[in-house]
Image 1 (cartoon, rainbow, N blue to C red):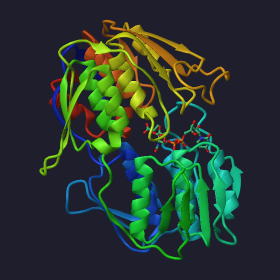
Image 2 (image 1 turned 180 degrees about the vertical axis):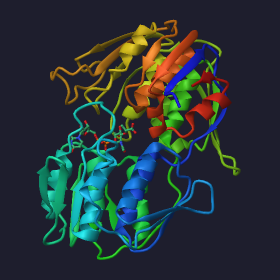
Image 3 (image 1 turned 90 degrees about the vertical axis):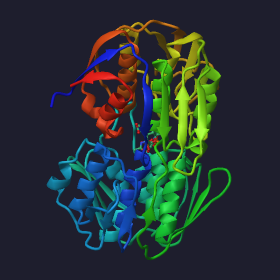
Length: 441
Ligand code: EPZ
């Protein structure tokens, strides 16, 4: 099938979509199954490319992954975890960042791990120095070879005291997955505490881990010799939910996002309301969600900066910027998590959006990217009339923002590379069609 989507934009998106388990929890919980000695079950797993990639990796390592009896349920049987060949694993090279999280679980189960070259969105350098430094401190021997990373743990893994220079989500997960079965206690300070991480801790606790989350980003893990399986319903995908909310604003629409949960989205909801967007939380017992809609009047400009939890998520930024291009006045967005996450605004500018990006830390406190030459602040002047354009999808979240822009613009846009969106948005074409979008491959 062609990966070009033809979008006839200009109509408001109206209707209902459902979000399932969060991509950034589901993929990590799948990795955690390797640590257990019995079967795990997970509900509400979205049908997205990242889940397929992790399934492929688990299967290569002997984990049996089968569909459960409910729609969206997967069952994992890790009783025959085994070493996989470098060539087989390398089929997944460059496809995702999740493989790096297999280090701890494979070292515990097999005493060895091979990690292929990582993929993921091109939104900055995305180093893994924290991961490797922590793993070495746990006792892993890391050998960097041209084909990837070989790790071994001749004396097993032992608990450590570790301070993260920045509260990295991935490095926090790495340390959790290594520490739960390490000998002794691990104390991690300046940890990330995103809801997806707390949900991963819930998964590990169900498996038998002992993890205490203290104040001030300190997490203490008491290693245990053995873990079992888990049965888990993941938190909903708050990035996808916010993407649809921003789509409602940008297209002057009205979208009920079934499954969206207020507690995970408070910071987004505050900004949504400041802009003038309307929302209503439905907590009905039949399975609630949040309705997001465009007000009758104009939208208002805002100043915001992305940050670690409980700040405004960096992954909420791109779809919201499309909505801000329709707001009255000057909006300022300071990106403090990734140094290179505004590349996508060039395409929006070609569509008529009025956006300039700057190297300075605008509108907030100076961040670690200040004076380093990265264009990590954006000023958006609105409202600007968007017109159709040919677009090439650069990465997942930017890609969704391109799609929204094409929906909001008058005329026919051709969006190239849309398959990338399947990495994180389940059945996005079906959902867009249900919302009244005029799209065709
Ligand atoms: C996770 O990436 C998410 N990915 C990202 O979502 C999300 O944007 C990010 O967390 C922040 O919330 C997954 O969960 C699969 P980080 P991760 O480590 O873990 C620096 C999406 O579209 N850093 O918290 O890779 C790094 O360069 C994706 O769903 C180091 O310097 O992010 C960045 O500036 C995109 N050294 C900052 O920390 C390290 O060893 C935050 O990265 C690790 C990270």
